Image 1 (cartoon, rainbow, N blue to C red):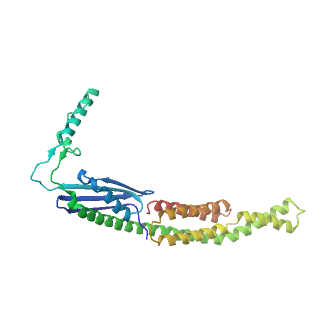
Image 2: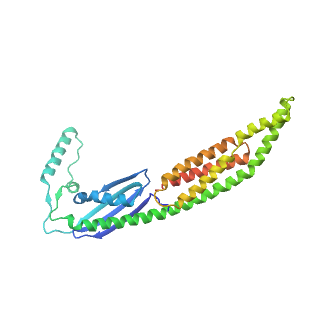
Length: 287
């Protein structure tokens, strides 16, 4: 099953302490890279949330953003006076360093983390609900990744089919290339060295033919395409396996292109290289 690393999911639900909104975005990355943006009162839960996500996702740069709108409490929040004093002192120091310091915007200041000390908020009572909500959001993200991955897999399969068609062109043109090259060599050798016998000429032709032989490259590329199709239908993290196999496929295509002297074979080899590059671009986004 092919899964993309690019996806988005969100979840919003009510807790005993207020309304929690969760948004998860993921993009391609070599490894699993988790980035949390949590309200201060939820930060103690980050280790548990990390464990949950690592069990469900294998690769990707994943941004998890949570916002919590607390219920109205009987008591108004208190101001963190120590933090206010530190910010004030910092403001005055900046004023001494520059004449362009803007006046303090108190509405913006209220948004400063931990400036307001909220009372009577116990996240322990909501921990299970928060983890369950995140789990549901991750499930939605996986569904999105799978849907996008299916689309990518379809595009890759189309290009693999095209690669096979160009391999067929190469297989059809290759015997003609060998015969044509044999005749050219025979004519040149007879003109250059009249004393050479037919046996010596045949030996020279065999040596040149071996240098131009692309049958092994064609066979290996065909085998790699079959292996790639099997990987597409397998489970788990397949992106890296695809990336490695593509390197091998590109090596075979490059060798064919360098050995070919027939225009049809050269064109087919170049087209295969183009298709493999298009596949590589798609594979970069597969988990």
